[in-house]
Structure formats: structure tokens, C-alpha cells
Image (cartoon, rainbow, N blue to C red; front, top):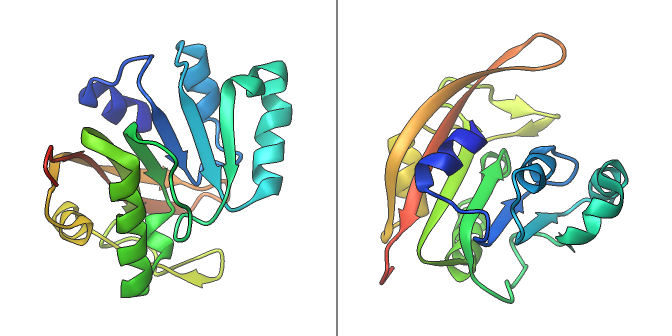
Length: 179
């Protein structure tokens, strides 16, 4: 789903891409394999990142790895694409959601895109022992606020390793040139 949404956004291999919560996820492997040259992975877990770095071997040097909390991180630059699969839904406090959006706005270039996957409105209420927020495309768009427009949405029935089905809402959004 992430790759499909990214293709829909028209992201090119030289564009700056940040994968928020990417840690040990294999998206960075796929993007490197496709020739992407400006990749950043941000995650709160150094352990998850270490796993990905070991998996990638020498190729890991082609990625900027940032160990930080997205709520307090201050991006040193702007990106063309913000990718988040399953971070935002862990933010159940309105102030934390606002801080996330503030970071997102500081990180995404005007005219840049966002690909965000969260638990769907009928998804689980808890994950990994934590309460989660759930969204339909409209609700997620509202949380992202003015100046960010949802341009595509989809639903995914994610099957966990234990066989449980978790419905996800995915949105592709664009940050306005002035927003």
C-alpha cells in the first residue's frame, strides 16, 4: 500500500523521503532497491533501527538514520514525502496529535505529499497493550488540519502474524503551497 500510494503521488527517486516510525520496517530496503537516493528513517527505537541497518549491511550508509521522538524532533530540512505506517494512531491525546502535525508541517515542503496509514474506524481499539485512535479518511484529514488535502484514500485488511485481521485506513495527502 505504501509503495502504491507513493507512486500515485508521483514521487521520484531523487525526492527527499522520510519514513516516520520506519525502524525495522522493510520499506527503506525496497526504496533503496528502486534507486531512491535521499532517504531518512526516523524512529524512537535505536534497537529497531539497528536491526534494519544490519539487514541492509553497507547499503545502510545511504540512509540518514534519526533516533528521535516525532513529537519533539525538529527537522533540519524539508522533505517531498512523509510516510507513516502506524505511528499516528498511537497518539490518542489531542496535544500529542497537534505536536505531530506541527512536526509534519515543519518537515514537509509546500506542495509535498504525505502517505499515512492508521487503524480504520472499525479497527482494533488497542495494539501492543496500548490504546489507539481509529480513523476513516475524512476524520484523518480533519486531524491533519487546514492546508493539507486528502487526495486519495484506501482501506487495507492487514493480517498479523497471529492471523488477526486489522483494518487500516490509508490516505495520500498533499500539503498546500501556502499551508
